[in-house]
Length: 260
Image (cartoon, rainbow, N blue to C red; front, side):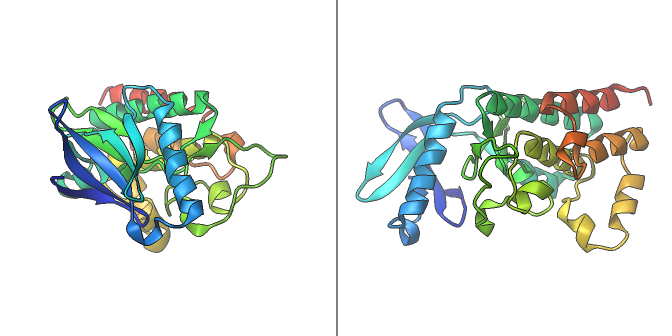
């Protein structure tokens, strides 16, 4: 082990060395304090199984999983770099071209997830890893609260607060514990567009009076066009959003490529 490189309330991620293949890997462990809880063990293994079934160049790759000494673990391909939120905090907002590039890569990953009948449910800059040695190649990570898509008429999703998504990024129906399909991820990707283009986390718009208007007025390039894209992606009603993440990414690319 080379040290801790990330984690959440129920898991911790370490950088480690695969001695047999001489490569670095990331090992995700269920924290000892919750390792005995059956529900969290099932959730942890469920995440591993879901991610392992996805084969896409912009999704973090699961190499193996198992249990050792009573501890559940997942071995992931190591991404040498940082997460998108840390980069936004350190470097400020992305250029229009880079915003379109990031959104296009994440959208491609999400459409693949949706084609498998899953909803990620926690799309945000913290869960997008950016590789520094591969031209800023992005990877969607953390499938900890991903679920099969739910549609009206099916049983509602469980309501535990920790599974509802992240403030500012979670779609209204998801945060309310209502059935959610792939359009919940479209909403979250729209919030990620806003964060990339402005460097402002969407949850702040609800908490700081007047910030929403200032942010939309300061959007780069054709701010009105990008504002319209974000508003459609983050429409309160799922049926008013883009039909797919790819459609949203195409709209962002049009904005980025427009003459200035």
